[in-house]
Structure formats: structure tokens, C-alpha cells
Image (cartoon, rainbow, N blue to C red; front, side, top):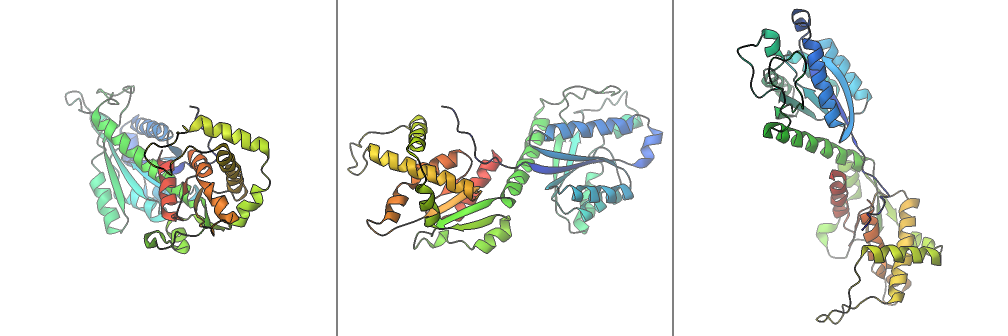
Length: 354
């Protein structure tokens, strides 16, 4: 089966990245600065598979830390990774996170599994001492009241860089695989957060009466997630329903029959019957109107429930909801019944995480 074309794609996180070092090292150890910069570019490339990466480069002084914080703020990043490339004083790192309040993650990624102790120089050791400053960074941020996380493991290079005195091919080692899986998780989580913050959720009708656990406060939903709740009327859908053409119904029915297996009558349940052609055509007509509603109001998700008086037009319309909402959910616009807004939020998060 060909997957349907998404109406809405999840947004990618804007990921901040910078590497750290000590300015005093560069003149003493030629080539070290360039080597650490290349490690940072490797990390940038890997992260770019999951998010939009803004790599400031190397931060090696307190003033550079301030500049990096301002730069990351200007790019509205959702998350900041600090690559502990070698030892650096915590005074270079703290200003970054004092100025940029995006969640912070320190990357303690060793380029090699084992140093070549017999052949190593001080410069070679400095290219591998990424774990050295992380406790110092943690102390500074803890005392400043700034939350952070640490990812530890191997860098995962596919080839040893020129000039290295040890084997740096670690991409298949479990310590690298585990670290990069954790990094991917952080970026995807930031993507979900960015997606929610820019989303418009439709709320059509009401919440099912008596289901107290489903009742949501729209103001609190927006305050906690950043999404906007657009309150819709059934009349909005009814207006669009009048505009649906027979050709659109035929096309949607073909899509439904390609996507779903239509069952026959149930041998055990007397109310479970194969849908009639009339029922299918009506559901497909409603589905066309539902997609138009999503496009008109630029919706990223929908929560809905309409009861309707017995025999009313409202009851007839809501009876055709499920097929169209299933199609929308398959196309990146999750729909949750019973007026359950929180489930719609959860579905959108799952879509964003991939």
C-alpha cells in the first residue's frame, strides 16, 4: 500500500552546538585547534539528520562564551549541545547558558576507546581528554541553578583523522551507538516541542459528557505546550459539506478501499455489518469536508465530539466522522474522539518523534 501524502510535516528542531577548548593550547600544540574543530563538524553532520544545526564553532574564552550565547539566542535554538572537545575552564561555558536558556546537554564523547600510551604526546592527550572538564562544567551550572544533562560514550568516527596517534574508528562500538541513540532522542524530543509550539489544534463540538478525566483547560494547554486551540462549530463543517462534489466522493472512496479492508457481516455480533454503499459514500463525503476544514483553519490536529439529537442532521454528520478522521490521522493530522484534547496532543508528539 502506498502511504498517503502528509498534510502536515513535523517541524525539525533548531539545534545549537558549540565545542570548547582553552585558548592557551593553540600556540603550544599546533594542529590541535583544527582537529577539535573537525570533531565538532562531524557532530554537526550527524545531528543534521534529525534537526537544523547551528554550530557556533569553538569557544575558548569567557568573551567567546558570551558571544556564543548571544549568537545561539539570535538563532532561536530549542536545545544546546556543548561538545567537551578538550579541557576548558568553566568560565567559558557558564556565560553561554546564562545568556541562552535553551536546555543544555554536555557531550562527553571520547574519540578513541584506548589511547596509544606508548606514543602519545601532550597534544595527543589533549585531543582525547573530553571527560576532564565535564565535572567542572556540572559544578558551575549546578551552582548557577541551570539544569543540564550529560551524554557519555565514544565519538563514533568512521575513519581515523590525519595526524592522530591512535585508532579512532569507533562507529560500530556499543559505546558510540548508545551515545548517538541518546543524542538522537534529545534532538527528536526538541523537534516534538517545536512542533507543538507552532501547532493549531481544532476542537470541534464538546467533550463527551461525564468523562471527567478528558476535560481540558485550553489556557493551560497553551501555557504548557505553546499550541493554539481553535474552537470550531459543526456549522463550519456543514458549510464545507455542501460544497463537496460527486467526483471528490468517488476519489475518496477509492482511497478508502485501497487503505482499508472492508469486512463482511460479523458472525457473532448482530450490529457489526458490512457498510452499505450509501454509508460508504456518505462517510467519504464527510471525509472530503473534514480535509477542507483542516486546510481552511490550518489545523495540525483535531479533537472532536458531537452527539446530536436523535434523527437530526448533526447526528447524521457525526455518524460519518470516523473514516475521514482516520484518513487525516494517517496524513499527519491526528484526530482524537470524545473531545479528548490531551490524546490529540499525545498523538501529535508521537508523530513528531517518528
